[in-house]
Image 1 (tube, rainbow, N blue to C red):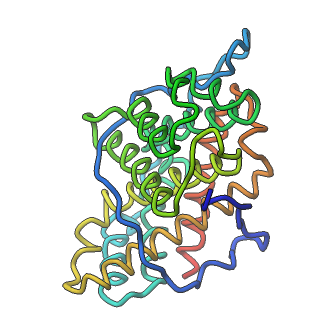
Image 2 (tube, one colour):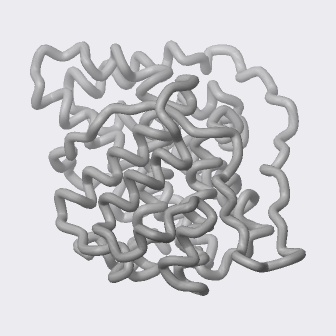
Length: 289
């Protein structure tokens, strides 16, 4: 699969090497909507007592400090869109996290995206340990094991994020569809020919795009589109995507785990921790920009 490969998470602490990389052109993606409240039943097939725990409970959100509201984030994203200033885009993303109550607070605001990502993590784990058909069985999709991967992922999106629902559910669905579009553009084969690393890449893509979609929905939709220059808009969106993607990959690499190593009991906590840690890194790097 064209997207395979080891993840490029930074090993240099809080300043990954990708921070000042030049932006590239974003891939177009379909629009969509929503997920159910669970993780799609991603427990081990026939695992007996190996049942999943509920999603990690977060403490009550604290109000953000004075002067750190969404207005500051919106202002920096607007500046980034008008001037193609990557530092302004990073500052805006970091200020969004601060205004959301930090990494855990921001992650807590994305229950549907975390549930969808948990479903994909369980699929990847079962694929590595039990094979393609068994990985799809919890979603009643085992008959698609030898089908094109794009078809399987679209069916998985409908299972995890059926159309129609809340904005949060729509963000999760869009993240999956956008990632599928990116994989299709690079030419992906049949599902049963994929590797665990390919599915791990799909998981990373969905987590990244769901965070990016959340920020754009809450503070960036109008800010990013203020420029009359379409190329500038695309550059700003790509800068935001690259920043979020780098943070997610860095924190995933720092976990020291592959999805095949995460038990069904640990999936919810692993996913929640990844979202929170990625948001925390975005805040730290954004404040340093």
